[in-house]
Image (cartoon, rainbow, N blue to C red):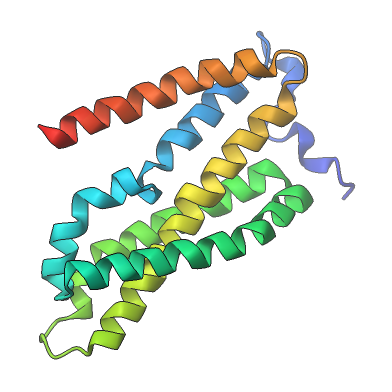
Amino acid sequence: MTPGYWVNIPVAPRKWPFYYGWMIIACSSIGIIASIPGQTIGVGVFVDFLADVIRLSPGSLSMAYMMGTLASSIVMPFAGRLLDRYGARSMGVIASMGLGATLGGFALCTMITPAGDVSWWRAMMTIGFLFFCIRFFGQGCLTLVSRVMLARWFNYRRGLATSISGIFCEHRLHRRRRVDTE
């Protein structure tokens, strides 16, 4: 297989009946919107629930969130190298699957403290790892892949493409903020 083997899979961009860049804008916008669970706005809604279920104080939960965010920021440059090596399609699939698995792990977080006799360290390490994964795959990789994919496709009208993508993404974020505060 040559390095350009996957370029025309599943469909060659030349065979689309319209400019393929519009599809890139749509996919990039969807990727950025899908990263909301990894952002603070997506996590903040569940802080009280997590503190009750895992039996951690809000301060301990905030500490785990901070540690997960810092660890994610340390690892993100390696994700950038992987993006350069394997491309946006592969990394987009990996980031989406990682985010989905992490959200599944959060759904099972009640199993961390089934009997209530769990040590503080075990709860902190588990929730810290989940925060690391959600920040790495969601807010980090998925957003990085979406923005890089858009920037690589457009050369001359990059600002226009970014602003069109931003309109949809900002609208979804503001709409979600209004719903969360009501």
